[in-house]
Amino acid sequence: MKYTVDQLFTDYFSGTIEKQIAWRRFELRFDNPVRDENVGGGKKQNEINRALDNQIIREESDPEMIQLTIRYESVKQFMQTIDQQLVTMLDYHYDEQKNYVWPKIAEMVYKSKSQCIRDVQHAKEKYYKSHWSRPVENLTL
Image 1 (cartoon, rainbow, N blue to C red):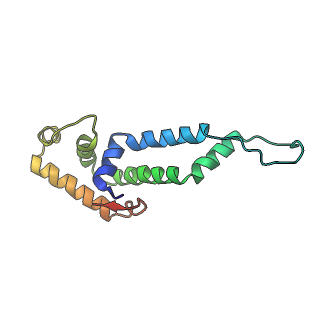
Image 2: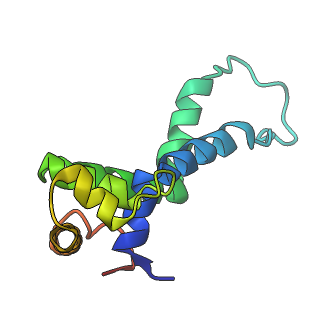
Image 3: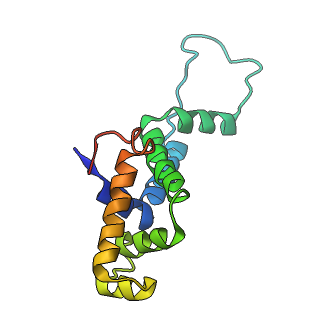
């Protein structure tokens, strides 16, 4: 499945990626079947239970968690490199909860509607061509 820049920005600004990360972290924390690796042996002696260490290892080695974190961090880092007014326009346009239309966005940032659309398109192209978009697999413009 192709993942477009529009979908990535929508997921980022509406908080979907953060929710997916939190949900995956929850799944990894509580979907931990107890496995007896000492089959046929006696009782384990001197076993140290490091639940936090094991949880961190599971999160950092989980492929789905890695991909979600890469998506979130790549957009976050990109947003720190562009103009704050452009970040505001992207937020207004891509946040599904705000649901602003172009005339309202243009009014809020004191630009014309066509200029706002051009600026957002330019930001999408800039992200797509940047090194931040490379780790996100199957990204299309």
